[in-house]
Amino acid sequence: MAAAYYINSYDIVDMELFSQYPPAVMALLEKYGASVVASDLAGVAVEGSPRMMNAIIRFPSPEAALQCYQDPEYQPLKAIRLKAVRNCTMVLVQAFTS
Image 1 (tube, rainbow, N blue to C red):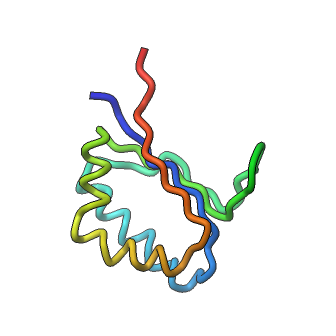
Image 2 (cartoon, rainbow, N blue to C red):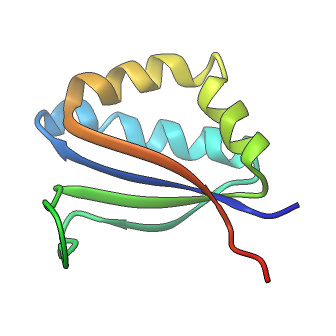
């Protein structure tokens, strides 16, 4: 089964609130065999509108990624993220295999 990646871009509007999100999410990612491939507050927009935060998270499969997103443990963390950010885009893409 091919890996899958969440590609996230958003603007953080409440850094104090947002600071609770990453450490809690990291523990949950381990449960699903996921890892953060990239995370940056200074990404460069080559095209389109830049966002403050950009991250890529690798999962072993699309199913694992969706299970993590739907996990009851993630829901309060998601609420923190949604309150702390604006202009959020979160896309799940499957790894390219030849």
